[in-house]
Structure formats: structure tokens, C-alpha cells
Image (cartoon, rainbow, N blue to C red; front, side):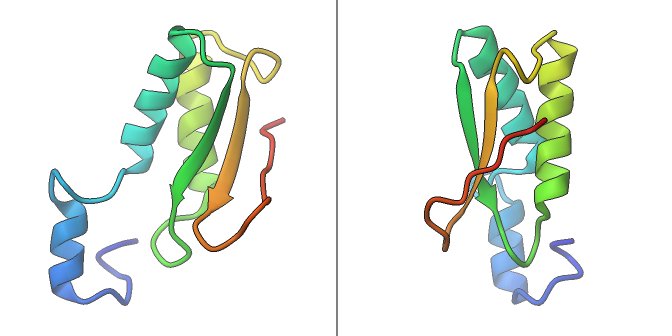
Length: 92
């Protein structure tokens, strides 16, 4: 999505760097690590209106949590957009 998106090339390059933005895969891995450490609620805050979709972020995170045996009863998985306040959703 990023490479086909409207961001200028310099920004795409920064986002793809090691110091760029958090990918869905990295966020999902971190969510699983946090759940293993006992965290009971995670809010995904790496969503971009232009270069990510909440379904993709949720799917990656839910899959990573499922692989470690976590269920929606074990952990709250929410979503927050940078430009929205109070918009949280729970994975069913």
C-alpha cells in the first residue's frame, strides 16, 4: 500500500527504514510479546488513513495472539487513529 500511495518518495523511504513507522507484522509481534508478559489490553495506534487498513492491522495482531493461545477473552485488542479520540474497537 505504501509504495502505491500518494506519499512523496522521501517519506516512503523513511517509513520503510529501520527508523520508520511500525508495520502490521512488527506491531503484531510486539502485541504477542506483550500478551505473553501479562498485558491484558493493547491498542493498535500505528494505523494510517492512507497506507494501512484497520482490517489488516487487526488480522495480523489477532493472528499473532492466536498463535500464542490468546483469545479475545484473554486480551482486549483495540484500535486508535491518530486523528480520532475515543474511537476504540474490540476484536470479537
